[in-house]
Picture 1 (tube, rainbow, N blue to C red):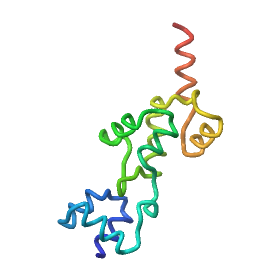
Picture 2 (spheres, rainbow, N blue to C red; picture 1 turned 180 degrees about the vertical axis):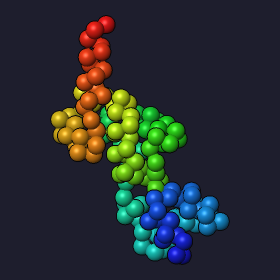
Picture 3 (cartoon, rainbow, N blue to C red; picture 1 turned 90 degrees about the horizontal axis):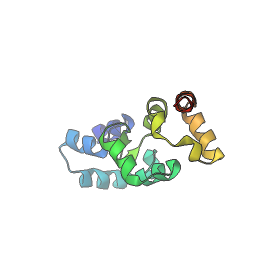
Picture 4 (cartoon, helix red, strand yellow; picture 1 turned 90 degrees about the vertical axis):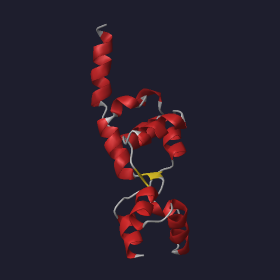
Length: 126
């Protein structure tokens, strides 16, 4: 059980926790529920939540997860991973199409307009 709790704190996914413990993902989920943990208590975002935030298809976000551009913990995209994504992959987001509130929140999470401004300048010269 100590390994399970340590794994939660180490940002490990349920699959990795299961592998470390030699258990199935379902068994790990059940143990977490038995210990009073819920997916929401593990923090992070669902794929569909991130898709809605970025106004894109969930399949695109799932692709980023598969490609390790976004990391998960307990099946949820971690906040730190999302922040890193916003810095390293700002070009993947159609920032100008998002609401002002969402743009402001993304900036608070680490998104930089600099990438888009460089692209806008480059596009204007074509």
